[in-house]
Length: 252
Ligand SMILES: NC(=O)c1ccc[n+]([C@@H]2O[C@H](COP(=O)([O-])OP(=O)(O)OC[C@H]3O[C@@H](n4cnc5c(N)ncnc54)[C@H](O)[C@@H]3O)[C@@H](O)[C@H]2O)c1
Image (cartoon, rainbow, N blue to C red):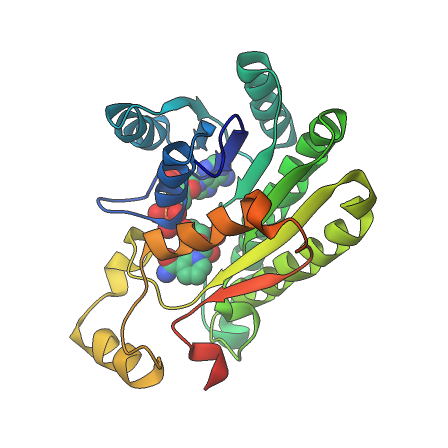
């Protein structure tokens, strides 16, 4: 029980389709490890599905509907968490989308949407979570970036936004270390999750087997294991860092 007596928010705790995404798997794992989890999602049904799994395993969780790209809704989520469970120890910022044309073909609207969803969601959640963590004597924030932050990725807006997540993580970690708040990132690589179900086919599977040293896709549960480590006291001397959950892609 590595998160015994902790209170955690997972922003983007549902999953966009059947199966196990990164946020859903993390919310479930946090609860298995003893945390009380606020499973927040734009899609209340998706959040409730995650909560139903947690409760079926004997865990404690609350579903909460919020669009965390809207500042008042991010604030409302943090306030509701503290009202329900009395404090906030852990925040996992999982909300993120990939969208738009490739390369310079990306439209202005798609560029703005990706930046808004992938970066403002984290800014607003941190803005309201951090004061609560300071009140509480410390905390841990984990942001979901992507290996797309580090490579010449064809979806420019996605790649640039995720590089922003890594930079934001470092900025915040530097500022908050004296408040005993650690801030880290995970960077998943090729994961077999509902997010990529529409582009999952034999060609992609063969491509991933050829490019990834571990010769397969990763899973939402494997992302969740890294998030759990960073959120737990086992990572008590780690801040401002990014763990690549990528089957070795980054060493090739
Ligand atoms: N292949 C992969 O799965 C992969 C690889 C690298 C990085 N990532 C990152 O992982 C994250 C998504 O992982 P997932 O598997 O949980 O995805 P998912 O899309 O299945 O689930 C994300 C959840 O976030 C919710 N959401 C979207 N916008 C929201 C908003 N504005 N406010 C609140 N909730 C919102 C959705 O309704 C959905 O339920 C993203 O940040 C993505 O960039 C994923």
